[in-house]
Image (tube, rainbow, N blue to C red; front, top):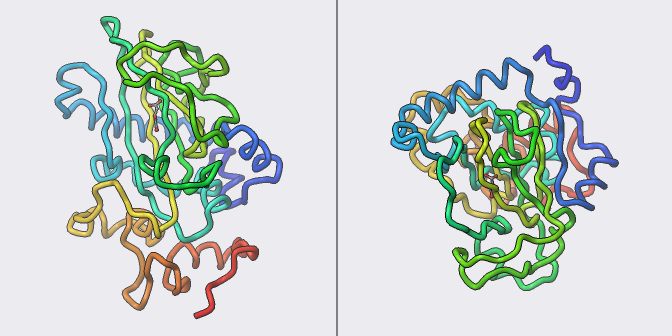
Length: 291
Ligand SMILES: O=C(O)CCC(=O)C(=O)O
């Protein structure tokens, strides 16, 4: 907790940051993780990678349900600085619905073309009728390796595209198609965090560099949207009991049994409501439901 970024712990997102995020659909927050935190979380995913079949084969790992598969990542769920952006945007009735950690070593041979552009949320992008569709969720990417130059498997985004429902693309992902003219490769350093709106059109790029790309993605949404991650059996795990109440809420297991539910009628039994309330950080523009 000695890192300078901890000065911003539990501080709401500033108005300037919110304006930038609303305009661009993403916000890069430099230096969120201290060098010690980077070492700790990178060590955790290195061990998970080494013991995986992908690690044995030296190929890319895209591991869904990040904390389920690597419990040492639990501290990222509610990292005091990064998580402030989530509750500032979405409030207290949230959980993690989709997460993954990714290890991308250098590609040894050219990968066949694949159109990677997408918005997050799957059929949310087919079954919601508004234009633009609503935000619904936001994701944090915790960068653990040096992606400070293009060509290292950078995340590619189209700034401002979050309010556009449709991106022209090929009829099949394997058919070649020109990259969008306004796409940019984001450059990031270890410890930086990228916050992005799920609607931002984004795509991974290929890593032909000598830098193995390592990153943890955590997607948050309202608790009335179901969780895609595998979390049902977590309370059977020994480590789960050592998590904080807010971390357990984020993994889909909230409340003290006295009434908490995902529609949020009983905020006083929802851990994040309590944590924000005791710090005077509740957003008064989104009041309590009338019981
Ligand atoms: O690995 C990447 O850079 C892209 C990840 C991604 O597409 C996503 O988080 O939805």
